[in-house]
Amino acid sequence: MADLFARATQGQEDVIEAFGSIADWLGVGLVNLVNMLNPQAIVLGGHLGMTYAIASDRVLSQIDGALPASRELVRMCASRLGGDATLIGAAEVAFSALLEDPVGLLRRSAAS
Figure 1 (cartoon, rainbow, N blue to C red):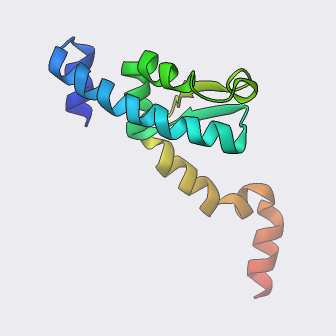
Figure 2 (figure 1 turned 30 degrees about the vertical axis):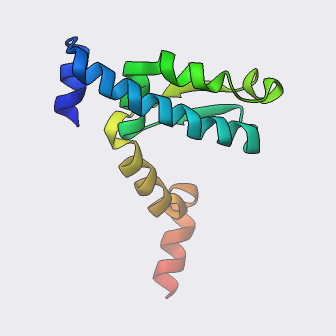
């Protein structure tokens, strides 16, 4: 995927069009999420973030089909974490107890 992303950023038209097609379908899915969940923000990571970075105009043109009240409130962006967003999120979940209360976790571990 990184190779395709590099080719798209270099202006290779067939790759840009392929990302555009993916972006159209991504937009269709996001319209459904916007209409159902009415989120304030959507942050796209990994492959979806790359797709959004290349073809945001096509994603946003699909979002225009969402209900006006929901569409006007939602902000869209690509994750700054890039392809590592999922891995970093999983690590945060795995270490959440340690990050929230490191001393308490050590005490509970020592007592066990």
